[in-house]
Image 1: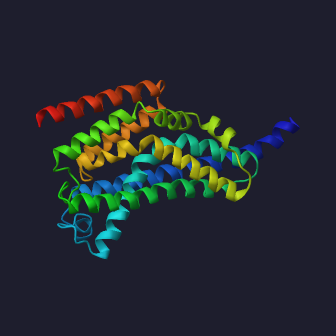
Image 2 (image 1 turned 120 degrees about the vertical axis):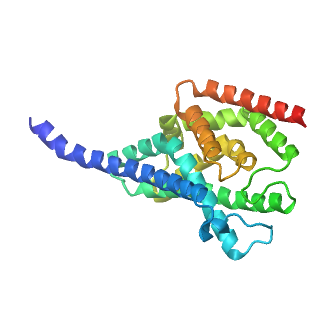
Image 3 (image 1 turned 90 degrees about the horizontal axis):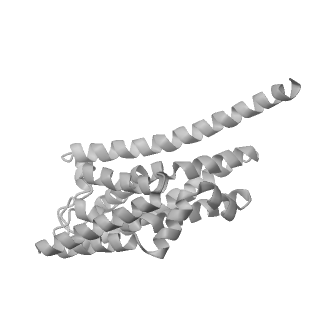
Length: 257
């Protein structure tokens, strides 16, 4: 009775802390989806217009708005599929009495996708400058669409994709193999997990240049694909089927000319 009485008060704060971390993670994802929905349904708003410059002669406000748009989109698409990893890390930290380490882990993970967002913004400007995408980032080039579909499909079968997907699908395996002490160690772990996640999904994220960033159905479909191959049982098979579907779509688009 005495042992159980002592365990009870200790276990409750851990559970509460974990619940708060999960709620914060999901809250960030929901905010991201809310932002995307607002952009899609209120494209006439001045702030939304900043993300859709009519020419490649962007202002500083255009540049900032587009970087933020990409960052919000990456948060909405990637955070749900990374939840099991974050949940496992927070639980281990709380068990060791190191709750603050979770902030460094999460911050480093988000930093990876922020850097990706900056790169995606640069690619958007370049594609718009050569006339291959319109202001809503929908491809206007059959060559670009075919290339992105075929590259994304082929990448699904690459060794790098398989390695990165395996690390994303096994949170405890990643944490045991990558565990580092201290707050800087947590940052490094979050950074490395972010890199594995990026290595797993960058080609699928590039397909946003095909369907456009204002197409909620397209963004949702890509998000579901990412989540299923990471979280579902036999997700590796799902990744294979997705690769075949993308290769088929690319070949079909190529035949259409």
